[in-house]
Amino acid sequence: MKTKTKTKTYKKLGFTYMETAEIVVMLNKIIANYIVHYHKLRKFHWNVEGPNFFELHQQFETEYENTKNIIDVLAERIRVFGIKSNYTLSQFLELSEIVEEDKDLTSLQMVNEVLSDFNIIHESLLEAENYALNAGDVATEEILTDIIRDLEKRHWMFSVWTKSN
Image (tube, rainbow, N blue to C red; front, side, top):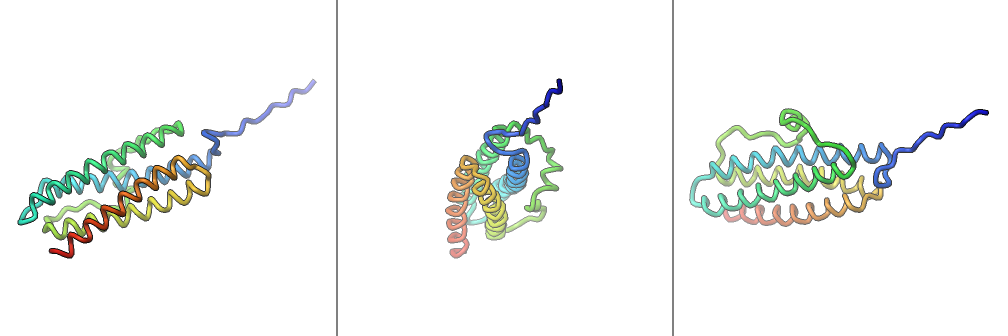
């Protein structure tokens, strides 16, 4: 008598292997962007000078602390899918669309650099959010929506600041 073997379909949290892989790839790209952005913020925090020192020193610290929390939330979301986000720093640098800043910048240039990074991050968040929405991954979509909402508010605040300088 022949026994028919049943092939198992991969489902993690109700998503196929390909859906999970695509979501994780997009989340890792966002993490890579945020990791480079985080290090730029730390550099700006340490090196800002001039009449806006106190306000920007604090704002850059607020931003890098927020960024650190976002990275953690996204990495934990990847772990929910049973996958490890175990890239090295050099791999994150390669994956990131945000590039390191190696020049000394004025406070206005630093803020403009932050705004540029926000634009890059925003695009990668929207791309991932749309994919999550189409895949029916409401949890990832909600996480990304919350991040986008906060990012857009911070973008507005930094943009307004540049008009006074």
